Structures are given as C-alpha cells and as structure tokens.
Length: 411
Ligand SMILES: *[C@@H]1O[C@H](CO)[C@@H](O)[C@H](O)[C@H]1NC(C)=O
Ligand SMILES: *[C@@H]1O[C@H](CO)[C@@H](O)[C@H](O)[C@H]1NC(C)=O
Ligand SMILES: *[C@@H]1O[C@H](CO)[C@@H](O)[C@H](O)[C@H]1NC(C)=O
Image 1 (cartoon, protein in one colour):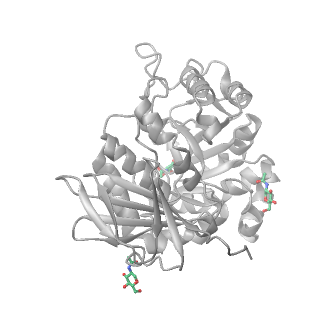
Image 2: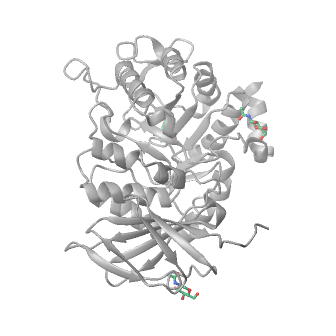
Image 3: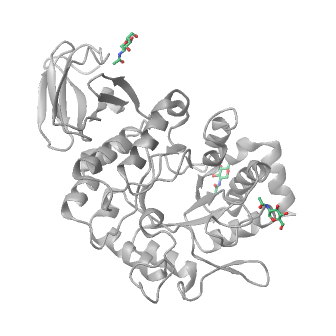
C-alpha cells in the first residue's frame, strides 16, 4: 500500500516531495569518512575504529569545544556501520561496534544539541561491501532511519545501475518525506553520472536532494583539493546557478586538521569552500586537532560568509597569468566575499587590483575586512588600486562591504 502511494507520489508529482524546509544554509558538522574510513579494527585501534565510542567522543568535542555553537551541528556516520539485516529485513548496526544501537547514539547526540547523520547506498552493497538499500528496501530503510531519529541521510551509489539510481534517489526522497520526520538528504547520484548534464538533471536534484556530491571523493592531499577545485571551476556556469538555500553542491569534506595540507593550503581550502557555498563537513580528529587548525575552522567571519542567507554560490572571476585567481561571492546587504588565491610555488606575490578591475562597480565607498588577519582596509573606491600579498598555495580573503555615507538617510 504505502509502497504504491510513494511510487505514485514520486512519479506523478515530484514537486510534492521537494520542500522539506531543511538546510536553508550549507550544512556544517563532522563526517567520519575522510579521516576514519572503514577502520573496523577495534581490537587493535579502539580509539579510532568506526564505532559508537568514536561518534560519542566526537559528539562530546563538538558540544564542548565551541563547534556546535558556531554551527557545526551535524555528526555524520559514513560507511561500515552496518551489521546486516534481521529476519524481517530491517537494517541492524554492527553489534560489537555499536552495542547500544543507532537510536541510542541519536538520543545521545540530540541531548548535546547536535544532529545525527547516517549513510546507506542505493545498490546491492555499500561501497565497502555492506548491505545496500536495494529498490525493494527503500521504504523499509527510510522508516528505520526515521524510527532511530536520524536527521540526515547520505545515500551513496556503489554497486547500482544507472536505472536503479534514476528510480532510487527520487523514491528515497519520497520515502523520507513519507516518514514525516525531517531528514536532510545528501545524494551521491550526480557523482556516479559524471556530474554534468545531460546525464545529470540538476533541476530534478534540487527538488529531491538537499545536497549532492558532484565529483570525486576528496583524499588527504593538496593535489586532490586542486583537482576538485579545477573541476568545479571548469563547470561553474552549470554548477553555480543550481545551488541555493535548501540545495547545495558538495565538493566533499574539509581536510583541515589532517596530514596532507600545509597551513596555507588549509586556509585556502577553507576560504575556497566558503566562497563556493559548500557544506562544511570536517573530517578530522577533534580530540587532537591543533589550535592553529581550530582557528581556521572556527573563524566567525568565515562561518558568517559560508552561512550567508542569500545562499549564492561564488565563482572564479579572474585567472591571471601571474597564477593569481580571484573568486567572488555576493552576500546579503550588498557585501561580497573575495578570495585571492595563488597557485604560485615561489614566494609571496604582490597582486595589484581595484574593485573596478574586478567589475565591482557599485558606486560609493567600500571597506574590507581581511577574514584571516582581521585587518580593515578602508577607503576603497572603484578606482582605488590596492595590493594584496598572497602566499604560495595560499589565499587572502576579504569581506567587502559598502560604507554608508554620513548624512545620507536610509531609504
Ligand atoms: C544486484 O544483485 C542482483 C541480484 O543478485 C543482480 O542481478 C544485479 O546484477 C546486481 N546489480 C549490480 C549493479 O551489481
Ligand atoms: C513532505 O513534503 C511536503 C510537500 O512538499 C512538505 O510540505 C513537508 O514538509 C515534507 N515533509 C517532510 C517530513 O519532509
Ligand atoms: C569584467 O567585465 C568585462 C566586460 O563584461 C569582461 O570582459 C571581464 O572579463 C570582466 N572581468 C572580471 C574580472 O570579471
């Protein structure tokens, strides 16, 4: 019965399932995968294996170390939590690693003012070979997640066919909606179709998913960050317009706090992801992260820009022969975020420009705040030449806002 109703909803009127009201701003939180992968070796590595203990300890850190209060509220499980299915076909977590079950973990997370995300896969198996959510299991699994009080589902696409994905993702959206529990929906669908039209229908995605992975998984290296950035920039004419409140492109997790990025590169990833209106999912050990990396991730002005209510994704507006690139994101109240990014590998570069050269031609006076140093650059008129000094594989990031002229009353 329910199956037929949901099927009908999905086929006849997909618009009916589109607005769950969630993620009006890019989601922020912590996701296990990049740092902790499928480490299930709890005998040798009890502190770091995918287990209830790991998630409870990260939840404690999110709540106690200032993360939650800055907006990092999602604690998301990734692959390798599943133990199997019971006699009735219901998913059960690994009994040894999640002895108290997922509902217990959700209650714990909620008691700390956080939200719990979980992971499944619209195929025969998850990417690491655990039982998947095949088409006949969609409604049952959606109900299970709702019963456990899960708040977000990442649905991966390994071991599925194109046809199964085309049926499965809209069906899961409808099934989540039918549970009555608001569950944010993260779809890996486009990443399995090459990320581009005509194979990917972004207007459909925006109707059924709150965020989606467009491209490859991030790995713990600067090369990986650049390859993702390059792909997003190469296709920004397609990708930039499809993002907005409730539906986001997801270039994948932040590496900050791990092993592959230098200090400059960590700052660069944070700035670039922010200007791209990307979800901010950390994937690092919050028990041991350095103060320097905490500062990057907890920069209040950075977070304010990422969470700007207009939800407009930024674009690369300039690529200079000097290997300096400029990214721009429009923000509420006629403000902008500007990222000056260096691909140089020699030394800090003095980049000269003006707002007019960047086509920021609104009349009047602007002021900028350097997002990392806090320095204020005042008296910026369209033709004012300014200089920013950008370190190799680093950024300078500005929050640029108009100054109301004294004596002119607000209209
Ligand atoms: C999934 O499993 C079914 C049943 O064993 C099989 O027919 C199908 O080819 C599998 N699909 C994929 C994508 O591996
Ligand atoms: C289900 O969809 C309807 C119609 O779009 C929406 O009003 C409602 O809030 C959704 N409910 C949930 C739980 O997502
Ligand atoms: C500024 O606008 C001109 C004319 O549309 C365009 O050719 C140029 O590429 C733009 N520059 C930037 C930095 O956006």
